[in-house]
Image (cartoon, rainbow, N blue to C red; front, side):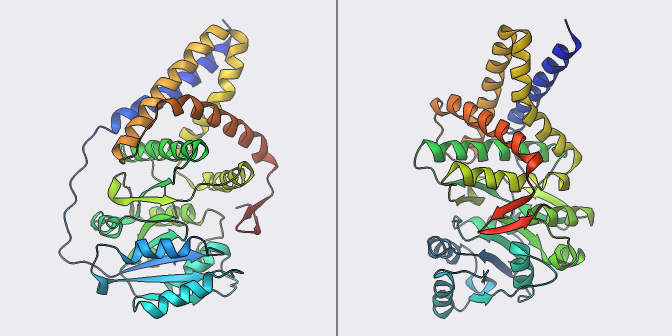
Length: 367
């Protein structure tokens, strides 16, 4: 039996062990969050670029938050939109006293979304910043639950996000979101790794100012991960929540081409992640190439290993769906496995040759 065969087999079993460990950890009970002694002032920072189709529904979900109306404000940053985004934002500003519109100007300090958030943060004196995107919709419990999770040592909190599900294509993306976030949450509970998502994130003013804000953070196409790393390096704790009260819903990516662009952008943020999380993602990404090579040595062994991966991954995904009150279809699991395999292999082939990132109709340099 060759050394390569044993290495491939070992890699596959390590990945399956990771999935199994993550699945078990989702059964651990969380400490109940108590209401704070007072509700701090919160500013929702909303970056918007050509979001006329989504902005209205997003703002409707934000203005309905079960939080004292005099304790939160919404800041909309129009990032050089060419559609009706600015008009919609101004209409909301005229209608609600706690909704504000800001036209974003180019800056030498930052670019793209990081520039929007930098300028919006300068407009408010709120204790906490809640950061989301204009294509998101939040439950009424979102703000209250995110704020309740903050303790004296916590500087940044990440909620749970899933895309809207209307057909097989969107269900596969939702399964992918749930699988990845279940892994992140599980290893966060074990104290091994944390991560942030910029469409569902809280950062305290103390932590933001401690790191100098986005003006002091080098540009990255994954600005959320860059901020997260800076906050954690400054000595603050990071927290990940996985509960229906903080489950935001985003729009699914419409085309395969746009999905690849999104994932290639996300991959630029991997060097900013903690080493344990980088290793976890690397092993997950190498599983499918390992299975293909393993089948050259022994198709039967590769089949049974592949079947084992489907089983443990399916258990993890099902638990993630249940924990966040989503409806799970077992029949989608096998479809998701092949979707994930094709997506992973395609990204592994494209990533080394990616020089610029196409995002929001802009070409941005690699981080």
